[in-house]
Each structure stands twice: as structure tokens, then as C-alpha cells.
Length: 101
Image (cartoon, rainbow, N blue to C red):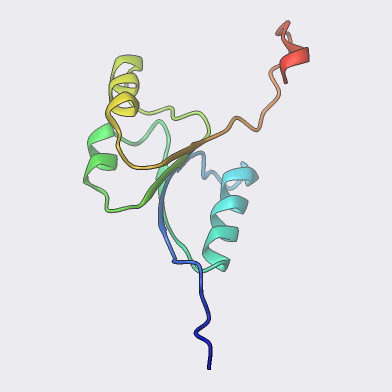
């Protein structure tokens, strides 16, 4: 009998806006959990960089990473050695870079 090769399950550290009125992050987290992954949710603006450093996860997932000061965010992301996934799902109106979006 052949062994089935399953995708290893991962633990995601997800920094985002998990307010019930903000559906995007909640939908992504729920989908990952339905696929069998573990999601550690950190509410942006209420989380400290130290909280993320203490967490046990495989992949850092975020959209805007609104945590700590700009200097703290920059240093953390520059020195972060685990895989990172970042995207910005929002369109920014009034910016003159529509061709790049």
C-alpha cells in the first residue's frame, strides 16, 4: 500500500484586525483552521512585539502589521527568521499608483 503524502500542518501567527465587523482576517483564519492548521490570532494595535516573539509558530501572517512603533516593526521584520506572508487586501483611494495595483 502506498503511503499518502499529506501536507504538514502549520501553526500561523496571524496579526490582524479580528473585530467581528472586519471579515477578511476572520475568513482567512477560519479557512486555515478548516484546512487543519492552527492559527494564533493577535489583534493589531493591542499586541506588543514581545507577545509575538514569545509565541510558538511556523509562519508569520499579516496584512498591515500595525504593532508597536515603526522602528520596532522594522527591526522585528528585518531580523525575523521564520517565513513571512504579507499582503494588503485594501485599495487605497486617492493614491496615484493605480497602474501598480
